[in-house]
Length: 285
Ligand SMILES: [Zn+2]
Image (cartoon, rainbow, N blue to C red; front, side):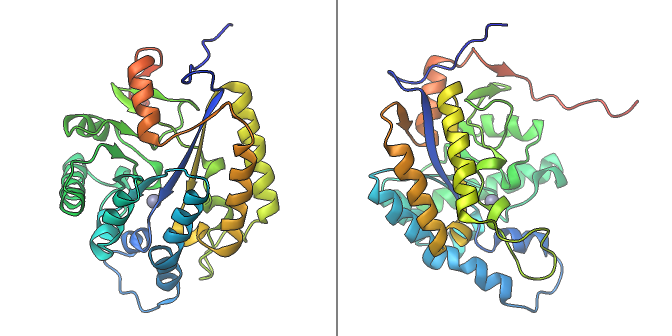
């Protein structure tokens, strides 16, 4: 079957977005809610992100004169009030990422609405602007939340994987992600005895990412990289990211864009071309 090939601006073959989820302690806080926390170990490991890793990543983007898309949980914006103004001043895109990095499928629609409204109010307090971008914590979404995002003026979501180029779900633009391009699946290591795997080698990850990048050039998709400052701000990973970006930079048919720019392009040119419904599946049989 001959399929429509996604159209990027001008003569570009694919797009590259450098996205950053500024989680810091927030997922740990959500997963441990209601329980006493006695140890500093994982907290300090995560606090490396807002203290140091975030700025190494923005310095790296500066090396390539590139802008990133940063998704910041509300509690992180409140605990580190310098972050959102800094990113805005540096010209990066910023968006929502829950308040306590809630796992949205565990909440009722009313609870999700309250979390969303709280994170919108927090974002406005720190930036003076209404948010336009949303990435769900842990990349989970509910049909109700898709509708809530639209009614609150959010322009796009970036949490799903139904295509590897932009599409629309229930009329909301989706700028898709991919687990294979997430740093956490290779490098997240708590050291508390619960880790399912050890650190991956940067060389191995470099090869996997190059293979995916070359594949997206071939198929005309989106290379959506996702990094966490507490993970990818570490020295060897900054060097890995620099190698990756140096490889990508050698091609002139790659559109370096923010997720907001990709969403705007999609809405302006192909909004009706790839439309899906936010359907769940019948498990009551
Ligand atoms: Zn996150």
